[in-house]
Length: 389
Ligand SMILES: Nc1ncnc2c1ncn2[C@@H]1O[C@H](COP(=O)(O)OP(=O)(O)O)[C@@H](O)[C@H]1O
Ligand SMILES: CC(=O)OP(=O)(O)O
Ligand SMILES: [Mg+2]
Image (tube, rainbow, N blue to C red):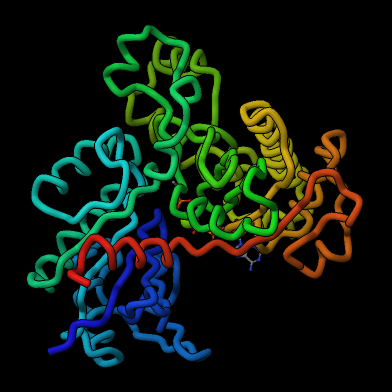
């Protein structure tokens, strides 16, 4: 039997994205993409294939991942010949210091991923659950892990360091950086900027970060030790004076769980607006708190661009990507306006049209919109790590 099908998983806090690829010598060829969105009503798996969207209803309780996946895969087996599965590749957010590249999943690798779960509580447990369910469903199919942290393995030690006692760095308390699959893909799309280009890529999705890419490699990024650092996100705070946490736990008697939940789930756009985490709703809202949440988001993005430019000693281009970066021209415009002093000069028409280049021809710093494709990196790494070809 020919095994020539690659399945990819990109597990997020509220969605599981799936990709189907044909395993080919020239590289994985995309066949279809799917999503299980736990916010969807009615709950279902949606599959996009040949420009058509197919829906597989799911009656299982969204809280029971095993039941959800069993049902989703019973339906997927009607769409694909799943006996052809060659490899299953997963995005795993935190690889710590252990993983500098993709890994084939073994019991030991599962234990190592599990040990890092606390640092990415919205993602890591979901990926582990997926790996375990897929093992039970398809015990003969190899699985691989592609790490968000791996692309940042090139960051110089100085960028990795927190200004805390050295011994803690030696114990792994350092900056790792995330969204590396997205930045890896973006770095591969910058050929026209020249081999030495200094680029800040802004991955603005539910989770959001920025990365300094110089000559195609990661130099520095806004996310650090955990997925909380950097700019505010949908529900995460971004960087925060550590004194606030001391005060909450010391003076206000909050527990670790309470603080963790506040920082990961009740902050960011949701926290500042007081009612909504999704940028679409916030942009459409007349409420001043919504405007303030978006303003703070843009201010902190612009500030991070400036910091990352300092890390690289210059900046030639800014790339916007992911849900907000690709689809929110007003947010791009507000970020660009705050960076006019660096030489970013937006072309409003190109921005509204969502062209690849959205800066004026005379702009010193180029502004680009590049749709990301984390799945293609997972598929490529799955093919190289998990198959014999
Ligand atoms: N078509 C769109 N138009 C406007 N905003 C969008 C669109 N798609 C996604 N977004 C915004 O992107 C954010 C989610 O980013 P996305 O990359 O899709 O999420 P995730 O990090 O979960 O993969 C939300 O704030 C959402 O409002
Ligand atoms: C690392 C991270 O925050 O990922 P996501 O944007 O998928 O939530
Ligand atoms: Mg994402």
